[in-house]
Length: 311
Ligand SMILES: [Mn+2]
Image (cartoon, rainbow, N blue to C red; front, side, top):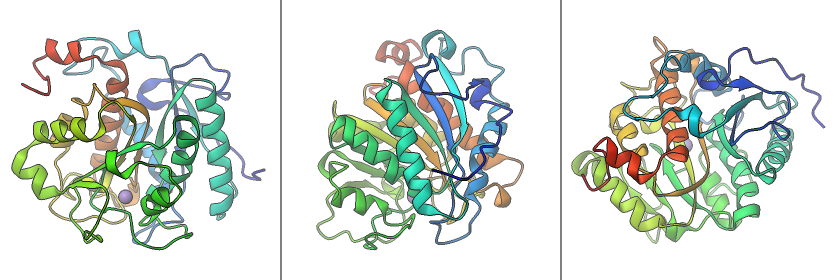
């Protein structure tokens, strides 16, 4: 077991209650933070992401009906924040064991998870537990990088989605990567890529239509690497890359995904040491908020605000 001391979290995501026992808590969704950045290849610092995102979410949480929605999230979804995962400092293997055990306990109690990273490697242990429950998952992956480098077995935030394929955790034919704008092994590549230029030229509605076509009603896991956003919108991250999505484009895509069968989600790679004026953390908090609304909303809610995918 971990020798790490679990530090108290003073502010729950979007003002949610903090709980010591997420398994016993009465909740639909549990938020957890994973303050881990030992799998980064560029600048480290994503271990500070969870707390920065929670703090920035305070700028949003005064709303009852989060714009543009016309319902109150709290009326539909019970959200609690379980604080940050405890694991032995400087031990990636211990983090993986602790995270898998924590995820397993929460999702086997019937709740779903919104995880705040941490570097992107954390999605791999989370996916292992979701695949164990749901079978191979449709990955809906927002990122500047494909994260499918061939580095088997390493703790590396650039390779875990190839490992996820090798382990049979995700169904590549029903997965999609959005916003990619760096090199990947595209010959025979099994996952559909809607690269950053594709998104810029065709727009959020076309992205949503493609995602719906590819994913259908399969159990879907949303993972949002904040470096999917352009560095002008999200400078506070370890491996920024120009030419990315705006925060607005990302939110317009996410809020239209209400028809997906989303079983879990994460927002990762916020590194507050490189942030300015909380803009990256605030973008991540907004994305997390939109993800919770995707859990809570129905197609009729989108129709009510004129934001249906077909509009
Ligand atoms: Mn990534």
